[in-house]
Length: 291
View (cartoon, helix red, strand yellow):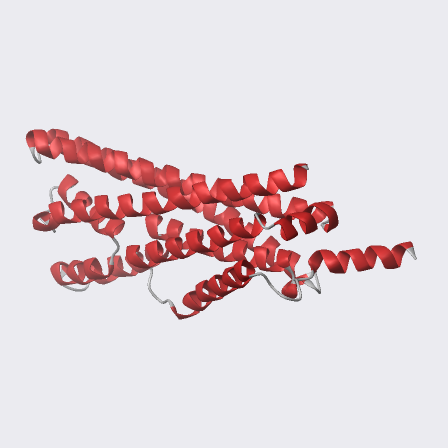
């Protein structure tokens, strides 16, 4: 009898309400829109990353509203097992850690580009500019290593999340199941953000261009590669050219720098808003489970 009762409680813990609240329906609809967008998106641009972050903000706003519903709070407090609680809280902490890494990278990029900009305003492209440009490129190299480490950790988290979901028969139709799906979508979007900032997907492409560079006219190759590059890559390439005293893309330097500053500002604002929303959601969870 006791085993049967526990099994019944486990099923209730994982089951969705027979008549979902409108907030829950909105949450599920937004989650599906983000998953559909992932399936159709083929580009990794600043605009596509920003759109993903805005979509995630809406998703987690619905999640927080869901946690404010008295019926959900009662179910969470009375029927969810300690394991369910730990899964949700650990997941939220994981997301916040990755967001912290992303925020740190964006802040570092903004500060470095501001230093380069200030040198240009004072003295132009002189020796001091070369020094600051070199510092910027060195900081980018260090940042890429940190992002690579974060991406390896993120990959492991995604694998654990997939295994955890596959081990629960009822979770595809459960609240905890859709919350885990939301976590997975958020992780994938954060991965896209980190890949964009570090240009990790572009490294192998750049190596191929380097080989072709020796076989074809350099101006044509660099022009083509620049058209496909993101704002971070354009700035890296331009600064590298200036620091090594090669007159490539010099005429576009100011526009690349301004575009990167705008890109960083947009991403920074979106990440900050989403991070605050995740903190608010985590506090809501802690409040529910502490009563």
